[in-house]
Amino acid sequence: MIKVQREDFDVGAELAQLTAGRTDVGGVASFIGLVRDVAEGATVGAMTLEHYPGMTEKKLAEIEAEAQRRWPLQASLIIHRYGRLEPGERIVLVATASPHRRAALESCAFLIDWLKTKAPFWKLEETAAGPQWVAARDSDDDAAERWSKPRRVAE
Amino acid sequence: MIKVQREDFDVGAELAQLTAGRTDVGGVASFIGLVRDVAEGATVGAMTLEHYPGMTEKKLAEIEAEAQRRWPLQASLIIHRYGRLEPGERIVLVATASPHRRAALESCAFLIDWLKTKAPFWKLEETAAGPQWVAARDSDDDAAERWSKPRRVAE
Amino acid sequence: MKILYFAWLKSKVGIGEEAVTPPAEVATVGALLDWLATRGPKHAAALANRSIVRVAVNQEYAGLDHPVKTGDEVALFPPVTGG
Amino acid sequence: MKILYFAWLKSKVGIGEEAVTPPAEVATVGALLDWLATRGPKHAAALANRSIVRVAVNQEYAGLDHPVKTGDEVALFPPVTGG
Image (cartoon, rainbow over all chains, first blue to last red; front, top):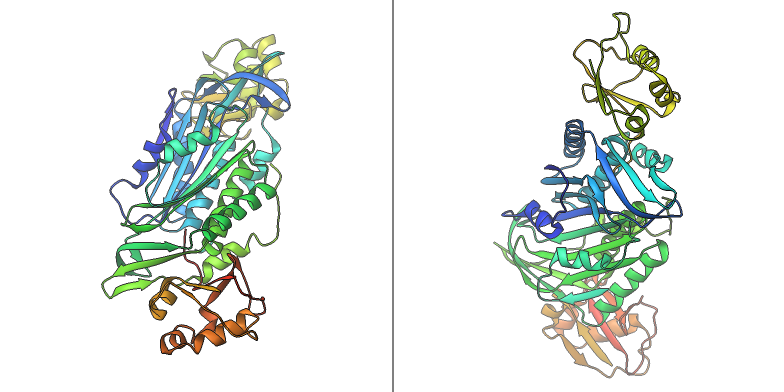
């Protein structure tokens, strides 16, 4: 399930939805990304997330399909917000459900790592020096690179 | 924060509590363990979780402290239930909050892996052949062993 | 051909979208970037450092050798920073 | 000395807890298990396979060489299966 939206989301309801009505799920792993009030040492007032409507949904669906291909998932979810967000607000939720905890944990990390380098979002931060477009980080490329070779660790 | 309880928990409220009132958290990783209706190929009706009151809380606190020592965490949470649980019910919630997603994701996996092999809980499953104590699995030992040497991956 | 600009590329070019009709010999992403840079000083400034410009053709990431043709949607943007 | 039994050890021994006063020469976990096994056929059956019995002394995991003394809380249980 892919959702690209301006409004906030209800984490408890979204995670419950992943396993609703089923009794064969062993574990649900999730990651919530939040707006921090500091970035690269500078204070950040708020940020505006711009994205590429159409391509965003397409890329997120591809990333989710890749996770489904690599791990035995029973359900998965990516919710990503856009627009202006204050520090402390939720930006993104990724979650995976699987019979096995290792698959859930690994695929959850995979989703957020790939999303960071492949989904067309850009952050404009409000700083004391004015609005600043966030630069991509090598560490994010490194994190995505970890998953460049499909692998699957047995439970 | 450690909670050992018979009753269910509110995932959304618990995760929100980890970051309540703060704007310096970058990510919250969590894992929810659920009762499955199958185990080792056999159908399971329900299970009863027994534990060692006193030692359980002590061990969970030690595991949480070890995660706090290994990763730069801003908050962490372990909730584990005991008593009789039906398939589909939540058993455990572990969650970690950090400025950096890698620290949150890794420490979350660490918490559930260590908990599985170190916290004194035992599962009694109701099967067609009568109640069966669940045997410990080598794969759980292997998962815990992954963390035997402290390591810390930079964000 | 529809050109889309995102993030600081949009700010620098001054528009988010434009319809263009490059000459027939502009048949690849690389040639298109070269041609777009000649459209004015803002375009030239936005495209000065190609190493930090990413391109998608019809919503798929594309390298400099990727073909472009009439009717394509070509998006120019910096490396992504979501999540 | 307080002995606690959990999971199938409790089922096999038939009780969850007992107070015992082993002789003075029972000074280690290993000696205590040997001595407990002599208390009756249920105890002997429960402790027949030591490789699947884990021990905690005063709520800390302990090996066979770990000392035990009057006043200790000693728990016997199978490998844990929580989470």
